[in-house]
Length: 227
Ligand SMILES: Nc1nc2c(c(=O)[nH]1)N(C=O)[C@@H](CNc1ccc(C(=O)N[C@@H](CCC(=O)O)C(=O)O)cc1)CN2
Ligand SMILES: Nc1ncnc2c1ncn2[C@@H]1O[C@H](COP(=O)(O)OP(=O)(O)OP(=O)(O)O)[C@@H](O)[C@H]1O
Image (cartoon, rainbow, N blue to C red; front, side, top):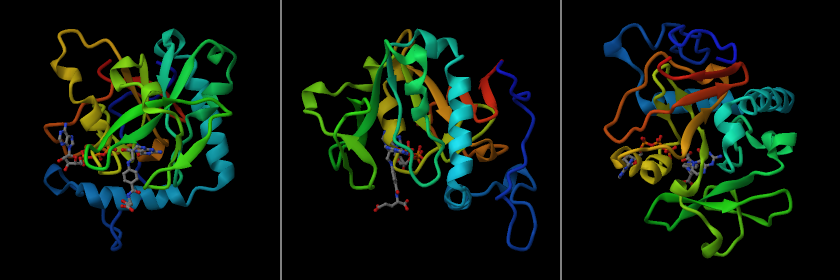
């Protein structure tokens, strides 16, 4: 799908060599820890130029808008990119975005550590949350829960070919999505993880609460997990 290399092709992870030059992936028993991966990939991401980020975001949008799930969705959760994350926002400028509603995540309570989704359009007032990420300023009654979205585009720090996602470590998305596997028929939201192609790693450590992504898209294309 969308011209992405086969799922099991392992891309080079430029940041994944030790200072001594050895690989961090010599064998399954020697996987880097989640915090090692976060540190390395976030550092690499922060080093991207604004020109590289611009081109990556434009290429990502061109792939996302071709997805059937995107074309069919009316309510779509995006995120405001930070620290070199690939931006999903250019999809809002595409002609097929005209009849869609977009949302950004809002941190729900200091202790709850989960997410709600607030309507977002180019004129929405934004205010930074405690992580310095802009959030729409709207009354709580206007916010939606994740289950009211048709499609959720998730940021990630790393992903693997089986759709496992490593995030920033707050557990915000996992906690917000935790109800989904318990539903008899989970049809929405569809989960699309997005990142730079270099954020793919051979295998992520798995946790019981991880919810695999259905589709991953990068600036190189989209691929469906498990096909
Ligand atoms: N763009 C974007 N928005 C997002 C996320 C994300 O990954 N990307 N999130 C994904 O869940 C949620 C926010 N989660 C976050 C978790 C940790 C940090 C972070 O910067 N942690 C710092 C320490 C910050 C501090 O405590 O002051 C760090 O780890 O260095 C940021 C966002 C919701 N919004
Ligand atoms: N469904 C859940 N219920 C309760 N706690 C959870 C749940 N999911 C994750 N957590 C907690 O959140 C913490 C961070 O989880 P993890 O390292 O998987 O975050 P992450 O996926 O990288 O972050 P994020 O989703 O915010 O991008 C874990 O220590 C875990 O205890």
